[in-house]
Length: 189
Image (cartoon, rainbow, N blue to C red):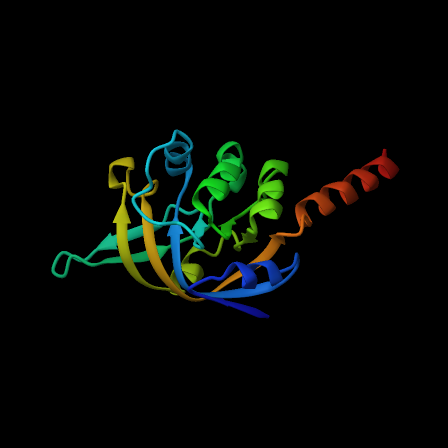
C-alpha cells in the first residue's frame, strides 16, 4: 500500500506504477462532463488544478440548514471514458497529476499521462457510501450553475482508496486486460 499526501508532488506521482494500491490524503476536486467540456472550450477554471487530482464524481450532498455546511453522503466514481475527448487537454493545460474514476480511459489519456506525469486511479464502483466516509470536509463549491452533480466540489479526504490502472510510464492495466481478453476470445472462437 502506498500513500499520496497533499500537496501532491510530480515526483511522488511518477513513482506510482500500474497495480499500486494507494491511499490519498488531502485535497481532491470533482469534475464530470460539464466541467471537462467547459475547460476544453477554453474557459478559465475557477480553481487552480496544477498538481491536483480531479475525481470523476457527482457526489450526493446535503446542506445543513443551520450551519450552511455541506456534507457528502455518497461519492462513487463516474464512468471515466465519457471524458476521453477532453481529458488529455485538461491534463496538459491545467497540470493535473491524477484522475480518479472507474472503467478506464483511452489512448489519448494514456499518452497525456506519460507526457505530462499524470496517473489514472481507479476507485471502486458500488462503494459510494464507503468512499463518502473518507471525505472529511467540503471546502468549496464552484460552477454551481452546472447543477450540483456537475459542479466542481473541493473536498478534503483521508485514506481515500484507489488503484493505479494507468501510470506516467505508459503502462495501462486496461490495455493489458483488453489484449488478454482478445487472445482468450480467439481461442474460444
